Image 1 (cartoon, rainbow, N blue to C red):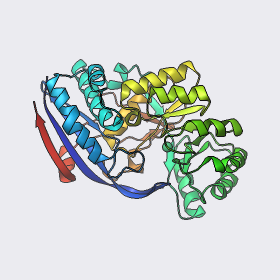
Image 2: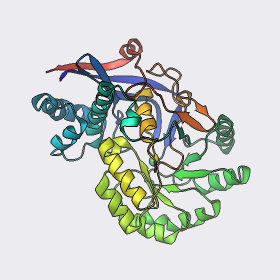
Image 3: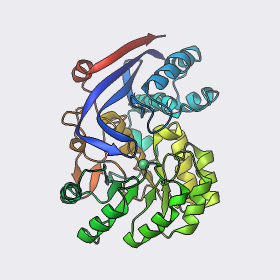
Image 4: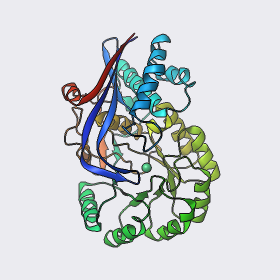
Length: 367
Ligand SMILES: [Mg+2]
């Protein structure tokens, strides 16, 4: 039985700032959950950040939903199993990242109680997952080129460039000239409209692996119009908030690839359902990132061991983001792969002395 839940919010500085079409960030504020049950401690982190830039959720909304609804429900219904948890909290509309944060902690708990690595319980089939890297918008082409060269040397299997209006085709034509054969994709983070269709048509010449989320964060229809118009595969990220949206997008022909993020879709159970559906429709998937700490990265690695995760994932080395991470394990690339931790549960152990030293919020909840 769950006796205690702890929530911490920490402030963790990034090694270098990260710029997308949303803006530039220098640090992440990460909401962490610890669940205590029968002498076992399970962990997770929320995909939310301080500000609601990627979606409407942020740490404040996640904290609100966890404190007012999810934690009282867990204690009242004596829930410990993630499947029961998903069913019992389905009355809460939206707030996928808040729900996912708790569901993931329950998965870690379940795996630890079974004495198994989480990825095995999830049906994972790999010891290593393909690592790609996402590069933020840079001030100059020289700077960007230098970073691409460094990342290729480090062994990343796919380079993804963040773009926004005014910083797109000029960058692409220049990078394609310098790196003709590399596996290259772009992520627009919803920064364009359907009126930019001619620009995306132009991008077909750059032989991109995919164009990620070109149009509005909640759009499915206009993506189908755009996909019908261009040769390059569209990948949806922000728009896919659950199984319903995934099937809607695939039925409409809005995309040919899906980026699965556990937090965005509301937990592993939903992510697995999307994975299975995509596999049945021959739609490849890959695991996206939210600048996670080592705890979130461990869950992403476990997810990416599922069979239909055939494209390079946004799962990079620890040192790409953090000079000091909050776990005892450093994720590194070997031969283009990130190794899957083999310990029980998520297979990594949080460094609580460090976590306490950078915590800006802490609260305990008792049964
Ligand atoms: Mg994206």
